[in-house]
Amino acid sequence: MSPELVTIPARRGKAARVGAGQRIRVVNTHGTQVVDAWAFNARDLTEWMSMEASRAWFMKLAAAVGDTFVTNRRRPILTLVEDTSGCAHDTLMAPCDVQRYGLLGVEGHHDNCQDNLHAALAALGLAIPATPPSLNLFMNIPWTPDGRLAWGEPVSPPGSYAVLHAEMDLVIAFSACPQDILPINGRLGRTTEAHFTIDVPASRSGPKGN
Ligand SMILES: [Zn+2]
Image (cartoon, rainbow, N blue to C red):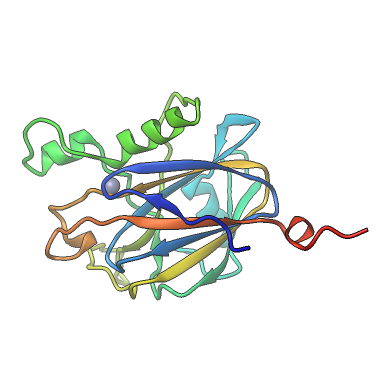
């Protein structure tokens, strides 16, 4: 039986509990959608996946297949084990928030990844006191040799995916980024849904024997 396909609704968030050893397949269903991702130790939500500690761990600006993200306590939490996206998933940019859209000229409310994170956790009955930096899946932020960054357009084909292996019991949270002003979700500013599955560990997926 294939695992349940979970929808990350357009412009919204979704969180789930994941056991150590399970794999999370994040699918860029329409190919143009950035998905912000966070991971938290299931037993202590103040231990979270840290972009700055992870870069110091794998010594790159972005993870490649085989690289492991670590927490703010320097412990492995997620490993990128498969990736068909062709994208160097961004680790540098802060998740969007209502202040960010204010700087972009939006007056009043705009959907944002920070609110989506907290709403997704609240749906599981969870709360955290801060917004950690996000792993920005499918977000194309190219860099130059002198360290300049740009808001790139998406490069991931529709249906491409990244697979993350859980190194501890954790809570994963995603936001289908509602950024429709910068071109990170494509020049048309079209925001879409994305999907994920959580694979059952091999030891529990086979037919019940004996
Ligand atoms: Zn966002």
